[in-house]
Image 1 (cartoon, rainbow, N blue to C red):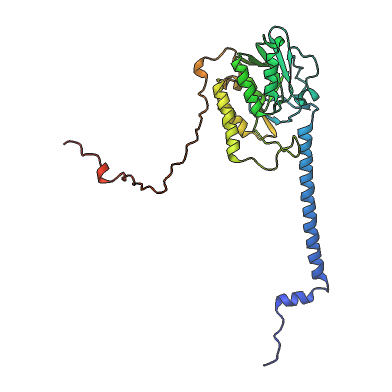
Image 2 (cartoon, rainbow, N blue to C red):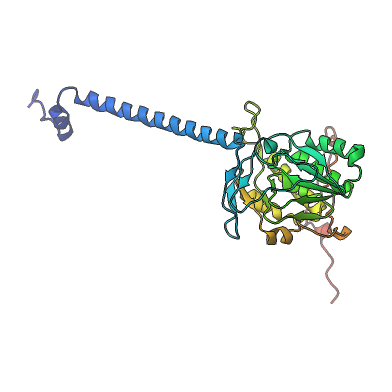
Length: 323
């Protein structure tokens, strides 16, 4: 009948049965829940950022159990070293100060010891390669034949330059007993004419990473381009090949996040030739990196270009073989 209203549906009856204002309260509680979730997410992000700052700025040594085959991933702290009940204090020729804490956090310093030995302790910063050149040019360092390394790493570019300078001057490298050589430091170790790692020493690698310019020491929030990452990785592998070290070593670095460290076993150090008690022959030196000249573009405007004949064109067909 015209004008007669249809009975309310099930959903409409459900809303009508709700107490007055309950729907608004549900919407309000949902908004509160979303706000609480966002605050919790921000808080978790703050905690992660705080933990990362603490990791990157910590200079107090970190107690860690010694690595063993199959259990070689350890946290990486760029300004300190691992310690443990079984680790002693490394002996560095010409240096008798502390070997941890601020000594490792400071830019790398060089010391002349007796018998043609010298020591390098601290972080590899931009400019450390030039500092090494100046050190080796000093009169008291001209007889140096072995450089002891105790470093948490740092600048990859400087480490590569240091390795090449050491090899060109036929200087050997060594990580002392219970010493520490991490991150970019193994690249310097690779430059030695001969290379040794003492008992209880830690030699470890991991992925290279960018450093934020806004907050020095913190990882960049913007990843570098793929091309730059590939170029850095190629530079590291090229150096290893030039120094007679198996570049497959760098696969371990690429597989290990920058916040961790892959500690090489003594067997791996020998297998990858990062430890070599005798000088390498010329056959182990890899080829230099290729150079790519700038090729000028060919002007084609206003010229008629003939298309080359297709592979299956009659003029290109090979003659039938004789019967």
